[in-house]
Image 1 (cartoon, rainbow, N blue to C red):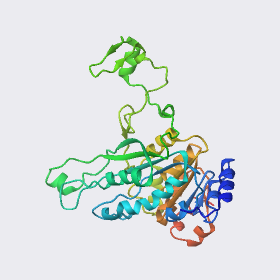
Image 2 (image 1 turned 90 degrees about the vertical axis):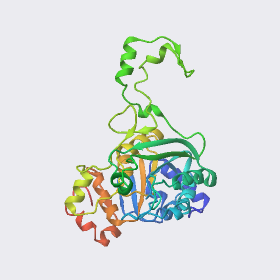
Image 3 (image 1 turned 180 degrees about the vertical axis):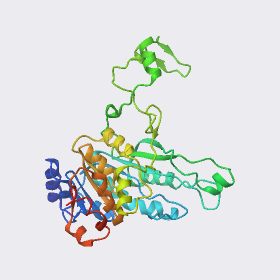
Image 4 (image 1 turned 45 degrees about the horizontal axis):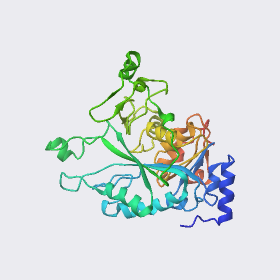
Length: 355
């Protein structure tokens, strides 16, 4: 797909951005809804923004699109029968805009088939399509353990009691080439008590029944931390990517309540983008979220001194996402201010950080 820029212009913008300029310069024909020191948020269908970004400009695309559900939710879900074709219209440009060592991290949940206690395989079909049709490489499968997920569908889980609560979502790490930029030293976890005890006592070299060789150096803790697993969690750092998404007292949620703005119903926790941004990018790299919602990704990227771009089609969610940048200056566009609602609820109490 065309970037909307000729080859010379694409190169110029990429070079200009690389020298530290603001990422909105990569999308010169669109006006952001708001900007911060490090990023820009667009009230646009992401396909309109992606089409204008020069090739190879983005280091990490990290997102959680609306899932394909057999019932519709208020934030807009595509029917399972149409989901793969719909998502691939974004994926082609996501691949194009990634740097050769860039990554695409996709959080996607499963669902049940309508009317039966059986699971849909739409997300597996999407995985295959992203690799075989679009050309991504599957770098690794990761899993988000979300203890806050509701026991749904109620018919099968809480009424008939014939299924158990679904508490895991897929987080697929794709790459443009087989060798994406990554450094697990940036996401080391604290050593477990067992590891500390091994270090204190020492171990003898041996071979496990599985055939794995255990060297005498296995008990060393000089690396500075343990390598995390591919199951993400928040509270127990040695086993899983465990993160709830039901925060009721964080700044974003409290400010939405105070302003009377609708809280995004499918937020992922800051720990998830924090983990992958640290793992897959370096300072000043560019992170893109094409389905930004309440823009957790952008806020985390800003805090980690990365550049960011975000796209969202719901103005209420995008306006409320400015609350995530407490203590930072948020520059609303003239067009956003002229649109008035829902920004009437934002401006009066955020004049210190929004202008």
